[in-house]
Length: 282
Length: 229
Image (tube, rainbow over all chains, first blue to last red; front, side, top):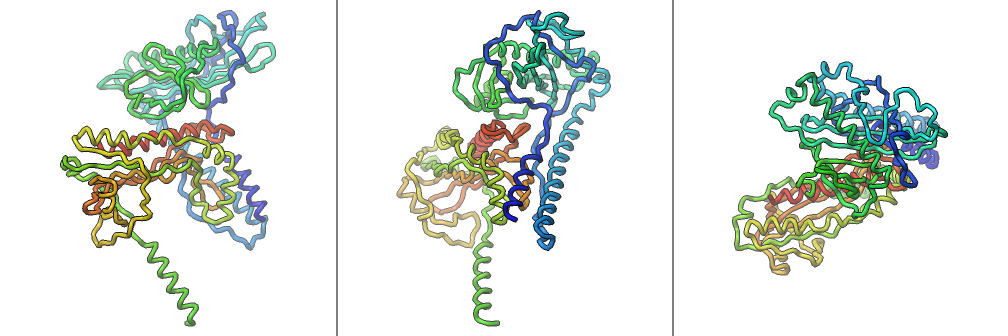
């Protein structure tokens, strides 16, 4: 009975995970890749709406009272009760996260009209080391395809925009993955007495330009990483990163400074680029 | 009622009375802390615990055992994490207090609080042990104590079932005792829990929960030092 229970709990602990789309395992390219505009194609779902969400707190802890299992049902009955208990808790945890995301998305309400019909083709731009895949790669079988899945966030105080860009690069000829990562880019603070008015002005052109620039910056970070420019030389430490007024700590190593931006590689291997401020040092 | 029943009842009552002590309420830093310029403030950080996992709510022995097994790889990882980032809190506090013109003394030698005698009073906000002898032995008038008793990962359970993902946790207390009176002139519980950003179950290096762990440490340090600003 004890062994069965422990086994069930082990199973449950493994299967009750919420799935996040702003997540990627880091697969590092074995050696620096020769990326050129002729070889690297960015595959972006151009007709899909731009994913823009409110930043939310992902604490999924739920309050659950103690429960007594009915032993008269026998070993199988107790296991069934534990499974039912686990299923209820798992649902409650996921539901709490979904509710938090829905609640956080209310920050976007003032922009609903200008975001209507805003699709990912608006993110296309000219790059020095890549081009966007519009039709197909033609006869170029040595091409690399960069599968691009950008998700944008706006902080609850609207002062900061964040991109979490899930990137997967594979060889066109055999679909073998050569690089996979999540690139996070945090915008400098947007200063205004009336942020809604500012971000809405000219049909939201400021907001849309900022999102596009974050996207461009993230691709530039990918290219630098592919070229092997981000080798960690510093020791691991805790960085304070501000999104609007909200601070979070990211443990990692500094890999570059680009203008006013600091780039770190976090413990997952993701690249995080954020504006340097004196308060980052704590 | 036979003798055994009576004895059992008396024993139960005694145990329950023992458990019924009122928890210490928070005490904001007294206004005169910074006005007594001629006093010396000692700053002491109690021995840091080893990082570990803690499962709250897995009440029965079998539940706790199941939780421990289910999280064994996480536990092995957390136990290997350093708590060194908590070192230096005493210096940060001493710096803040010194800036206000108060002499400070960082106490490095271990202090065994268990050896202090019990202190009884009907009044509120007094330490339950007698700290007054430390005035002479440590050569300070007020003693700031930072006591982190849980550092690592915390996961809540309801019996066998987890009700949260593991979170980075730093739990403890910060207090200041006036060694002339044994009165608390500051008392705050530290309870920092930080959720993992995204997935947490990433063996063997658990980067998400490790990041939450370091985040909890930074927030705890900030909360503790903010008490003296």
